[in-house]
Image 1: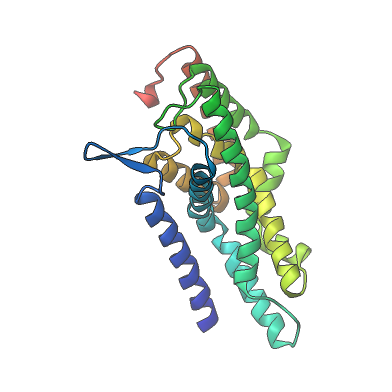
Image 2 (image 1 turned 90 degrees about the vertical axis):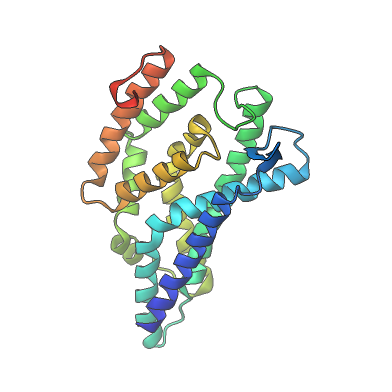
Length: 253
């Protein structure tokens, strides 16, 4: 019980610090006449690139660790049982590190995409989409992906912690790191297009970030999460079509 409380406390601390960093502006805010505003696009020197990477990596931890917590806690429970029998196992921290590293790799991809979008003038200085076509295309793509076999397969893995642990178990630190990375890969496969919606609503739009984080939590943990995901896909497709043709939908009024 004590070890479980330590794991829970550690997760809450990391999640809390991540959200605090985002609420503080994630290093991307600048003073504009007494008001804090998001940094403009360039120049993309190594400092700016590092700030953007840290922002994305922390944002991914803040958004994804809550929904990954059941898997992390289950790993810790099984690891403690195996350790009591004298087997070589690693702590939950090692498993979590593997998970976070995969999302850090995704953050590199997101930073590269952000750079390309800014160079193409598709992102504003407020770090949100400037192109109606780009925004619509991203919304439709995210909606269609919700119905694909890859999305459904990854979501089923994310929703079945016990099945994952029983079929993917590896011994030792390297095994725990690999397990965490594999679970992270399933989560990326499940949510990567949802994360790209941040380019539509604004990369540092806290309401948008929070909404996506809550949605991901519901999709992965709620009993009807799979159908919530599919219905959300239809909603995103409709939203994308309305955006493309500048039609105001009732639920967006």
